[in-house]
Length: 279
Picture 1 (tube, rainbow, N blue to C red):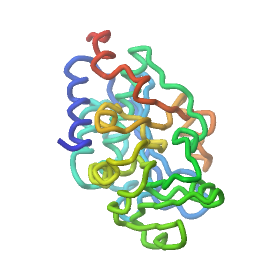
Picture 2: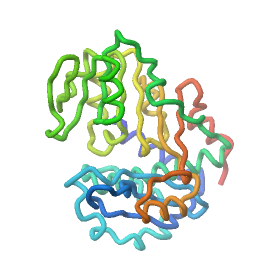
Picture 3: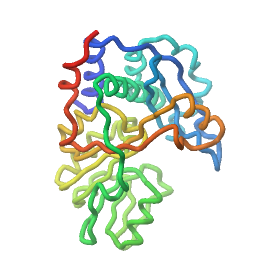
Picture 4: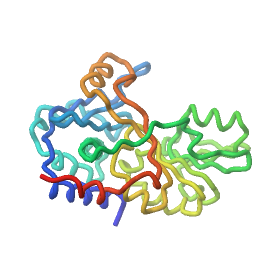
């Protein structure tokens, strides 16, 4: 079973055991607003206040989301209905579905009294040394700059051809097979949207440490931890209304959200959390 299919199964299981609040509102930004904009995230919010993010700058695959979907049509619907949008291959649908899964996950965490710890420095979770060969799935410009400045050998998997290059100790390619030589790997949560996550996990399976990072990595981590992912770093929306206000005003999430890091040994597992929840 794929990671995404297993994640959707978990959400269906949650819905069978817990009465989930309906969708309160959905924020869909303009996917291609031009330079200088910060509205790269959309939001799905449940009626009791739990919310999840989706990434809105995937490119042509999300073109027209603002006109394709009418946000009001989601209001009052069961969140699992929206989560099921993630089942297909359409990246726009998957974006909304993943945000709903993130919101459901946040709801379960809140009900169970579970809160992942605050995230340290993004690079610190890999404990990178000069002898390491780091793999990065998704091009994170600030992290690339830091690693190259430190002289770390780096292989980046990126679908956008304008980033592709080969230099000494630095390769940017669309081929996930190049991860086979990496001993530490960072994976973007967007791999769930383009259905590359299973392939990425397969080619990076020999790495001694793998982490998933990105603001939209707020979903149940069980399928990833079962496949050897060491930790997940994502963002938790603290104030959905403030988040929407800030994004609508061309600002970043700021104090409306916090970054968290969840390591496999610190996670009790969804099954254990669900034991304390009742309808």
